[in-house]
Image 1 (tube, rainbow, N blue to C red):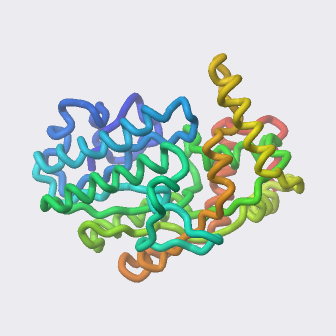
Image 2 (tube, rainbow, N blue to C red):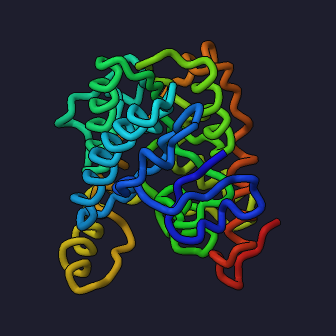
Length: 305
């Protein structure tokens, strides 16, 4: 097994993986794929900050094109492209969306969602040209080894450190990140060329998610529901006033805009075709809390029951 890495990549420590230094834009990308049976294109720039919009598009769209081209030149038989339900969009009224649904591109909130949609269009072009590519669309992964952390992991960290006094009335589909990894393997083995597979599990409101974390940690869940306009105003001040001064805003504006929707999905297709059987979400949340605690992300006052 071989992994393209930037920097030291401590998450790979202890694993039997050959590390190849580089990135999506390295001239040696095709060389790094020589002899591979498959390429799993999991690299992406996951940011909701407006200041990152250009880089999000460059990495997620142009980077995908370069990966596909490199895999073709290297003669790799199959590519599994990690997209996101962000590319699919959301259905009105909070109805769970399937792989067959597609929001109008103009309705996709923020550069990240648009970048994942455009990357899938790049995949479709490659498939039309005869390349074997399968698409997986994870929902909201949670679990250990979220080193950055991702915006999802930040919800856990903020809750555990007492920095989430209120919540917004939104909904997410949560899935264990380890099940997402297993879904990638299943997509390689059993996925159909050019098709999408949603890798998700439980649809829940943000309030329900925080209550689940409260049961795990012993910390109280916030009871104050934040009106959308208040959240938008707070995020706008952070991005447009404090951001240019060098401060990192607490909440991204696009994140608040997304939170006005219930982002629910149905993974029945992956279950039927790939044999995707995700584990209970509570385990993933508990393991995420433990990992963040053990790796110094939580303050000294954190207490896990």
